[in-house]
Every structure is written in C-alpha cells, then in structure tokens.
Length: 124
Image (spheres, rainbow, N blue to C red):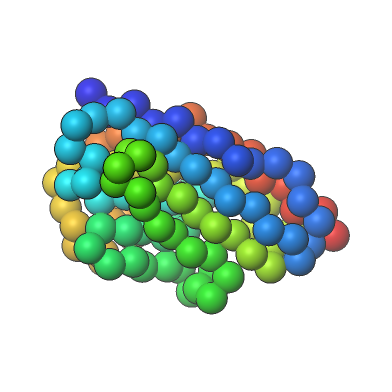
C-alpha cells in the first residue's frame, strides 16, 4: 500500500507561481513512475506531467510547469509558473508501480495509487 499526500495548493493571482509537493510512503519510491493530474470544475480529469527516468508534460503547461522528484525524501514536486485562470483545478498526484513509459504514464489507468488532491485557484 502506498499513501500519497499532496500539499502546496492555494489561491494565487494570474502570473504567479505555486509549488505542489506530494509525499509518498513506501521503501521503493525511486522505482515508481509518478504523475500529476488535475480536474477543473465541470471537466474531466486531465494529465499534467509525469516523471520516471525522464519527464513528460501536457502541451498547455510545457515551459511553465516543471515536475521533479527527490528520492531521498520520497517526494515529487510540481513547480507551476505563469499561472493563469485556466489552471484552476484540484491537482492530484499518482504513483505507478507498473511502468515508466511516458506515453503510458499520461493515462490515469497506468496508476495504482492516488492522493486526495490539493486545490489550486488562480484569480484573474
């Protein structure tokens, strides 16, 4: 069983930045493929970014968001810059114990464990 706990969400003005953190349990964190997803009000959950041996982003966040991990701290991060109101959503981190393939990690069904989510609100 892997537990994931997100933090770092909040209210920020357009153009601002936030850094989300996701702390994971488990002794083999370095072997997990990790991802961030988000769900905006009235919309489906969508992929944001993933990291395993490399990184992968959805097009609309590439160049603004950076996913990283600290295996010594069992933590994955999502640095979000140049935020705009369209980024408003609940952000979820997820762990995959089955794959490191980026194209697969872009799909929610690749993940075995999910966090509870953290709200990000960007005001205009």
